[in-house]
Length: 327
Ligand code: BYC
Image (tube, rainbow, N blue to C red; front, side):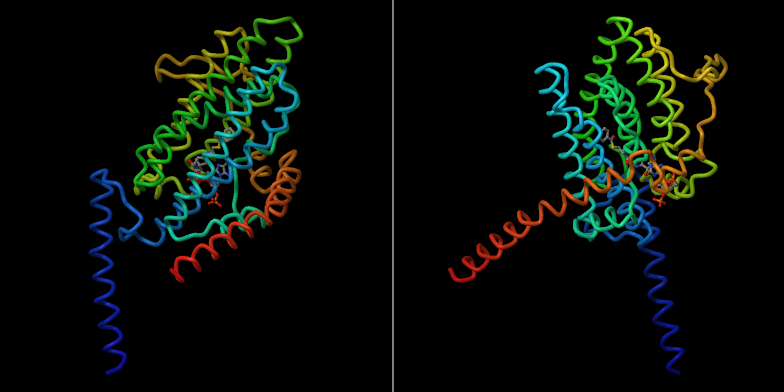
């Protein structure tokens, strides 16, 4: 008897869930935004927390390779622009952490996951910035790849993530242009400057293609994320678009992408290009990137050094709450 009652209530619950799931999927299919208080499948929530928090971590860790050049920028104008860009990245990280918090995960949990190595961040930020031209290459290629990926995310199905992306994309497009402008100047400069620009392109090209993630056939998350409209285009579709836009930009300033297989393919209306070294990608994802350990050490130290201000903010908030209660 008891078992039968349990079975009955389980089946009522599962009918309810099936109804909710059907309503949720219909809303997603109609391109409606899902908002924080709406019902959503647990796996949808988990996927979003994973992707948005990893995206936030990438913005924050992404400040490090460029921050490294603020003191060494070649002029006051370049320094001011770079400083503003790096501050923008901090802002992007904060919008994204806030968007992820609306899904019920605290900022502390996300940061702890980053520092313990449980959460990922983009592989691209585990490569060193060796010369000033690397700052140009990052703006042009890394922000360029980020825009390619983020423009479709303005239509992602989760409202807070989509809205964060609108502002992020506006700023990223400025970042991409400032990077391309640095490369343009170097490529039109002395032989040594042009060599420096070409060398930066050579080193950042393949890691930039890796930013889009593994090929679709090896991407465990793409199919479900496309069905739920979290992702609007697949990893390979975005990578192809990036190559199609970037190769002519390199040509226009007299640089060459370091891939002998790049060739215009009239039939597909896009460039053919060579195979990414996926063994390097997976090694960097596992934490074996050239400067991965340094990046995490700097982040952990920044978190520890900032403990006093978090404690002060908490103490102030408690004091204000006490005053409100007393009033
Ligand atoms: N690096 O099934 P897949 C910026 C992981 S910052 C590391 O295809 P998904 C900027 C992936 O997480 C912009 N890990 O996954 C900042 C998954 O592992 P988990 C950063 C990667 O999520 C400062 C596994 O591989 N942009 O622009 O469907 C200065 C299998 O992959 C990478 C974003 O974060 C990678 N490159 O697709 C300058 C965009 N690729 O999580 C610039 C938002 C894959 O299952 N994110 N993995 O353990 C996305 O669009 C998607 O998450 C991805 C991957 C396309 C990256």
